[in-house]
Image 1 (cartoon, one colour):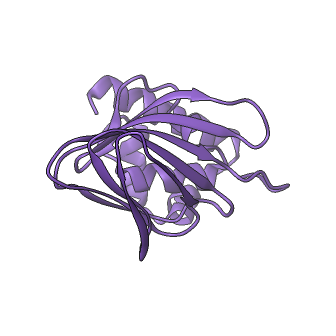
Image 2 (cartoon, rainbow, N blue to C red):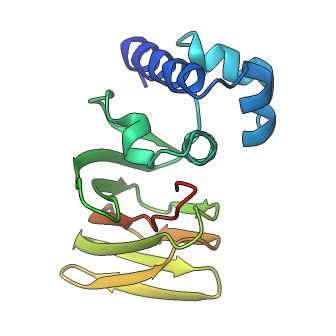
Amino acid sequence: MNKATLDTLGRHIQSLRLARGLSLSQLAADAGIAKSNLSRLEQGNGNPTLDTIWRLSLQLQVPFGNLIAPVSALVGESGVQVRLIDQGKDNPPVDAYWMSCAPHTERKAEAHAAGTVEAITLISGQLEVGIEGNTKTLTAGQSHSFSADQPHLYRTGESWATALLTIVYHQSKEGL
């Protein structure tokens, strides 16, 4: 992410944290990240991983898309980039992303909030996706849905893969 994108993301995280009455130390501990890393992130520095952003969204009780909504740039790491396309306003909340994965990439994603489901439709390339130990290899035009509240992965082969990723969040009385 460039400096302007990091500044925007940092300010947004800080405003969500303050709106929930959380201290920097409390949010960092709850999200399992170092306080210094969260401080740098809020100041528009650092290079957050997708998992760090997911952990923060869980602790702030907002969909991942809400956390990155002010960011118009691609968000990503290690060969995987996502861009928020749209957010549904219904219940349950739904986010849609454009995802691009570089050749020979393996991304192991942490479990998301309980009840979260991902649906992926492959646009181009080939992509192995799903819960670790129970994946499906997709080719262009194929789709797969799985429970994303368990560790899951995305793995490419020889070529780039692009996909439409839809995340449906389970709405509970306590939030996400």
